[in-house]
Length: 61
Image 1 (cartoon, rainbow, N blue to C red):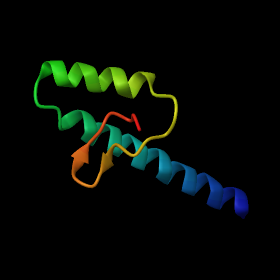
Image 2: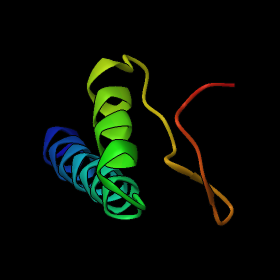
Image 3: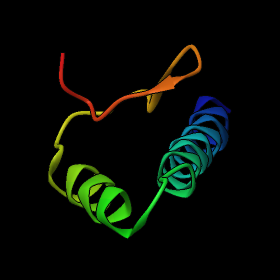
Image 4: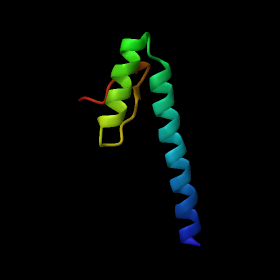
């Protein structure tokens, strides 16, 4: 029973991270910004919230 719940929760979290990454990339203002964001998304190893409030960020603290 716990295994089923863990699988469903994991699928939900993966979907949320994918959605946040896509929203981050879609909010780019031009191709240079998009390329930068793609680079950040591909090279950042830690899970990141792509938005802090309404201001997009690149994952650096």
